[in-house]
Image 1 (cartoon, rainbow, N blue to C red):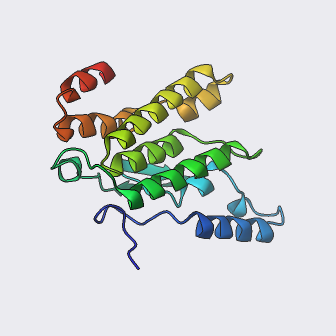
Image 2 (tube, rainbow, N blue to C red):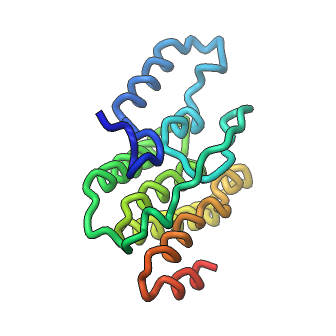
Length: 182
């Protein structure tokens, strides 16, 4: 089967497989090893990522950036059911993380949701990405601890997909919308 998102932008997110692996880790975690600890990084690891450097634990690696010019070469898509389903699945993953006691989403989780909605190539997807960026800002500003706030602080990678999508969409309001984010 096809294992790419929107023309080769990375592996599809399979929430069933990811959940299965996390449950396997839980089953093998007898408490004697921190290597099987279920944390935010474990939940973020299977999410499709675009945007340069990403750090997981002590491992830093580079990832390609999505090609927004190609994605929006003909303006907004009217529909993109497969990418919308992928974005919805990633969004549900973030919601499931919020229901856990031992973990909570961090800015990379929010960025994965934002990127997934941008990859739909639709105006609705771009608007949903904007809503998630605003939610990340709200979560960071309303957090009660400095540690939580630092985990949620938005950065360039948070907003780049939104700015690039507006800039390449050809939408007549694109420049104004970019200016509002800047």
